[in-house]
Amino acid sequence: KKLISLNCPKNKIVVHHMGVNEKRFKFKTRVFFEPLRLISVCRLVEKKGIKYIFEALHKLKINYPDVVFRYTLVGDGPLRKQLENMARSFNLEENIEFKGWLNQRQILDLLGKNDIFLAPSHKSKKGNMEGIPVSIMEAMAKGLIVISTKHSGIPELVVDGKSGLLVSEKDSEKIAESIKYLAENKQKWPYYSKNAREIVKNKFNINRLNDKLLKIFKNILNEK
Image 1 (cartoon, rainbow, N blue to C red):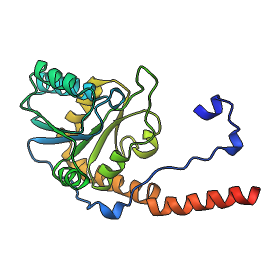
Image 2 (cartoon, one colour):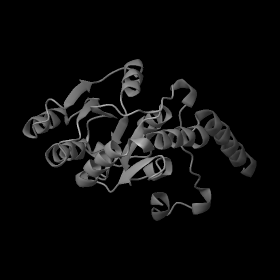
Image 3 (cartoon, rainbow, N blue to C red):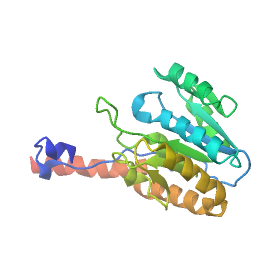
């Protein structure tokens, strides 16, 4: 839609998704244990919306004290200091762990130890936006339950109420409510996990997508 608004010919536009090899990610159906284990993996920049996670966790701690949680933040970037200060001001130091940059093996290990993946992306003040974050695909392939936003192409991957939960951009209240909902409805976790894995396997499988891309190139050559 953005390309069409810039007057690119509609008949020459083809959507081709990025993907992952789901076989590299060991699937595990999530089982609820306290504390609720939350995680994000991203660069600490505005469009990733981490400040809204912190606001949501602050609301969760005040309004729903029975929901015990632990949040792991993997990644680094220009907003790290600001986020560390925010965690202190919200009295979340005991609930949030800043991991910094980790390698792929370490990230996969952490994904296996957590249950809910938070990715509240939004359009930045400078207009910076996501495509569809590969980190969400990887989390879904491992069976984590995703809470994300109705932003850019994310709803093409995360189907609200089926393979995860979606909220509006910058809505920390709804993020808190979604976490609380999952804490109170643990019987639905296998449903979300299974559907998440299936969507990645069937629609965001890198091998199938490579075959599709080859066909796109062949069609272009045949039109010449």
